[in-house]
Amino acid sequence: MSDQIQQPDTIVPSRRFLDAWHMFAANKAALLGLALGVFIAIITIFGPFIYPADPFEMVTAPMSPPGEDVLLGSDYLGRDILAGIVYGARTTVLVGFAATLFTLVIGILIGVLAGFYGGWVENLLMRVTEFFQVLPGLLLAMVLVALFSPSLGTIIFAIGVVSWTPVARLTRAEFLKIKEREFVMAERAMGATDWSIMWKVILPNSAPPLIVAATLGVGVAILFEAALSFLGLGDPNTYSWGYMIGASRDFIWDAWWAVTFPGLAIFITVLSISLIGDGLNDALNPKLRLA
Image (cartoon, rainbow, N blue to C red; front, side, top):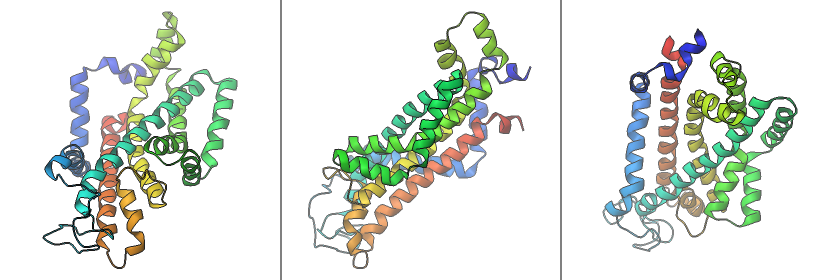
């Protein structure tokens, strides 16, 4: 009976969405995160049209403090910090979402195969997962970026390679928990193929925790990109918040604003994503909904 209650088809989708939204809205911190996320999305999409300035152009004297000419000050080359934040948002957010998507593809694929088939397949894939899990993530990402030359594609690839293991373990755990449920057995008895059971029956029932993990993974990816750019391993042809911090780190005592404002942008973005992830956990966790 409990399996039938948790089966998603037993609840009207619109009602399920409304229940999830009410749980999300009950979390005031999550609503704050959502508001911040909408603001960041507006800056990312429409910022260059609202503030059409070239972040690479030297517009004033180097290390000018915040004022009327440059609202957030300038860096050591006289470039507008506000223009850098507006244009750097696209690169930072793009890397965060693209790297998370790559992470999900690898982690879900390995977790699905390990959790569904078990046996030697599970043992092999979990040993590979454990191998990558014990490696220092930032160090491995640095090696990969340096090996293939810094670029957005390389950074996304490197972040995905070092970040997929938690997703794989979570997916495997969900499959182990769900694959013996009655509705899965019913699908098998009706002649459904392994492929259909994995991707059309079990995976949709495993989606809530994976959605939460994906949300939090975006914040982790943004921090990884900032760290790589800070260490000089960012794409030199693009402007990102991490690049801004790394380029001005030697002048922090003379131009604190050149590091502080990009750092605040990263902090607010990651905080927003974390708060949204916490709200999604409240909304999508069936135990909390039934409490």
